[in-house]
Length: 291
Ligand SMILES: [Zn+2]
Image 1 (spheres, protein in one colour):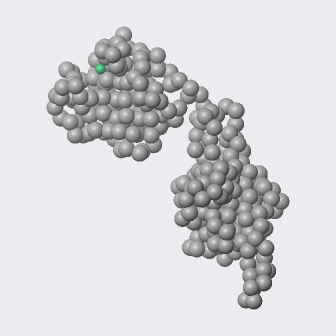
Image 2 (tube, rainbow, N blue to C red; image 1 turned 90 degrees about the horizontal axis):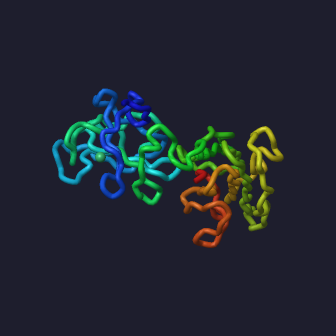
């Protein structure tokens, strides 16, 4: 009997061989009425392994396969796909329902089918049957946190908003004077350090100092909408992410200034600083992600 199923494109499948711990560490599936079908991602995730070049029987082998790490840390693995039909590559982000590979008969297989596995975050194979038409354990809502940020330079004004590590905020070595930043889940505070400036005689004309912490993101709000005094170049930044109670494990802000190493939240990094940047050096590039 065909049953609801999230890993084949018709969204229905038949089980041709059940899971048996240590003997058959997955389930074998075919489309409704014993048909071939496109194999699709069970849930959102990132492709971590593929094979696409197998066109024969191989004892003990998955043949062509795709392995995906999902956002809750669990893995799903799709095996015995048809030769040269893999649609994704390692490192690629996939959405639930996205095509991965066409069903085939490669590796240790005796007829077209999908051998489907579910693995825990430590790569232990478990019975996938309960998840054929259900979320993986501990999935809940999407727990990915996105950060959006932009900087202002004295020369160029406010620059475009950057999301996560898709780009950096900054432009052509121009000193950053303001930073505005927000997250789509949880909350952040952030603060910047003004670079010390001296005149030609060596007198300090702008004192190096940390400005107050900011929690808002509104470039029209001087007091709590961005960090910076709209005037002086900055040389360092601190960012702290507060993880909301429905997201565990805790996440951290990971950020860097220019090409200095990444730092995490306010923890001291390898050189003992709890900020990104270097006192006395203009910040010109900022990168931030929450992970
Ligand atoms: Zn199997």
